[in-house]
Length: 281
Length: 184
Image (cartoon, rainbow over all chains, first blue to last red; front, side, top):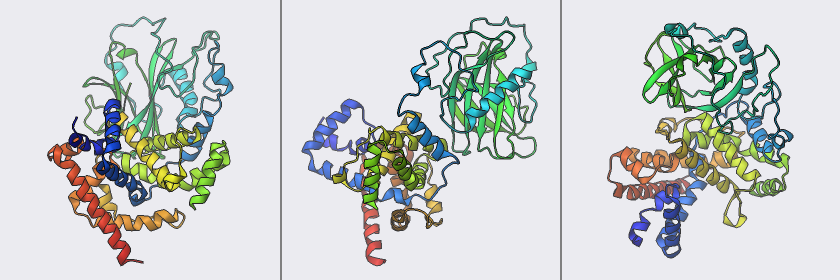
């Protein structure tokens, strides 16, 4: 590549857009091109001024505790981590690894609810999706496919090998942080739980705007462009909402994305509102 | 001020948790405000800041005193981390909110002196730029976009992006120095 061409890559180099080989080639060019060197120094100097143009924004509540705990937690491996190869049951209530937000401590509470009544909705609106297509009674899957538990799973869990008789043990097979879109500054988490009876989707969100009239937050599982309803909820006064949804009826769906929208009515079969929170699964 | 930062940094290198907390407290709001301006997402901003402190604590980011102020280094690490995570999430926000919020209140008395002093002049310097120049700086610096994406967003030929950025930055620099001469 000619030097002239290399000089054109300065911006993309500064913004880390180059591939590893492009980057190396550019850095070699940088050694010999005073103009680029000087320009790069000017761009770097922007970090001394432009960040200060930021308008003050309050960090989310509890950010300091979360961040410091997480940073320090990785300092020395805890006993739990060093033991992680052992076969043992780590119940949910036993101090999960501290990661993000208020969500984890309350999972235990949600689990109890889901165990007791298979309650689909914790707050507010009753959804009827589970009754729409009763279909045939699916046999209970004895051996659900294993998912890789290491996959960005914020909760450490080991498979429950021996269950006390008569008790169901839910465990998280997958958990993702939901990303807020430009429409609302909300936050949330989606987890897929599994127990002896099947799998369920657990959604927890916070920082939700309050609703008017019949409005409700609707969870969707998407297979490509095709949306499937996966629970409805309304937030509490503090903007928190959660819903647990049985995935039994969606066993044949190869969903890849979970999304939350704000719908004008809790019965919408197709999403009308904008996506507020979303993540790949 | 900078000396204290360096002192904190040294102590952190020796895994002094109090120093980590002190440094965190000092820069939390500035870092968050800056990163939020870039990402426009609170969750992602928190992730970025956590990553920044991970790098400091685990000595993956090394500060070299001879290369300038600690705060500049810290902000550089924050920006690079934010650009990196935004690209990984493939969800770069596009917002020119800053244009409307120029007249918002600046940092309060509890915030860093540096932010208060520097912030005022930089905000004014940005605000006096022409709208399209503000936009190109936002896309380039705060959103950290590639030239191709900037070209797409602004609907201009790829070959002209670098020139536009250069021109906008030249005006910005001029505005900042004019402010210095005129003020204080």
